[in-house]
Length: 457
Image (tube, rainbow, N blue to C red):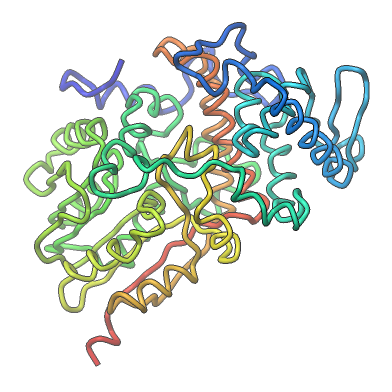
């Protein structure tokens, strides 16, 4: 079921995302909140999850992977519990706990597919964690040392490579985007706030400590994030604004309310339909155009360009054309404001050819830039220059925690949409995996302002 009709769609999403539905208020995080392991797994839908790798090669690789995993666990601040009562790990009683259910299947999966196997084994129920984000944060904080350096150099020989059809060439991008954003508008409405914003919020000081900020502040924080970007891009009365990546329309709505004329592009038909509905309901259909169009095909001239967490879907080899497109359409004196999830430059270089669990199950074709990469690409391929940036990774960790709580609280509704237990465990792993990255400092999110001042001197 999707929410793309014109019969009250937007209002139903507002009803489902403001306040807490009776009987579904998020409780404290705990083991009972994690979706139960699937009793059976549909092999047609989940071919990589239904059955762990088997055979002589898988057994040998599994045993080797098991030894490496156990050796790493002994050094980490974690506790790994096995069915025979064995407990490994360098953590004390308060350390996060990873409970092995089927250790043999777990080892075979990671032996065959590395970190892809780690995610698939959780999806299958081969291991459990009452605080999944905390367990994954331990691994994220130690990502450079989990595997011995000599073996890291060999990983390209045995880990899978990106399928050609998932590279973000123009003919593939629509299908890559569709696999995530066209899942179902109602799926997203079950864990997003009333703004339907699917990116990091920027919480006000009055919200209190980010580690305990509550749902009540999320919509306000999302609007604050958008308003800061619009301010930095100089968006106001009469501004011609290009938005690359529409989402569900909140930024376009807020820009139109300032008096701007907005041209917004997306490759998600689901997002386009709901964004258009929300924009029409707000009375801004004459100011906002939402086009189903690749960013590379945009024409015209714009006083400002804003793009929120879309560069992550562009792909490493296409960053030059992404910024060249912005440079080409930006009017003299115009400004650019983007929000981008970033990773350390060294890790970016080391993983730019990797095919990961996130690629396989969540964002095909995606890749995170480093700040250094953004600065380098713009300097080498455009007249654009980075003028200002602000990191806010701790705000993303808080945003993701609220999404997790909301998603778990709506487990029954998500199931009624046709998303089974494997999907729900996959989505939870994705949210927790992401939060762990920000909490550990492995990931950051930046608001970056660019202009062409040097080119005009």
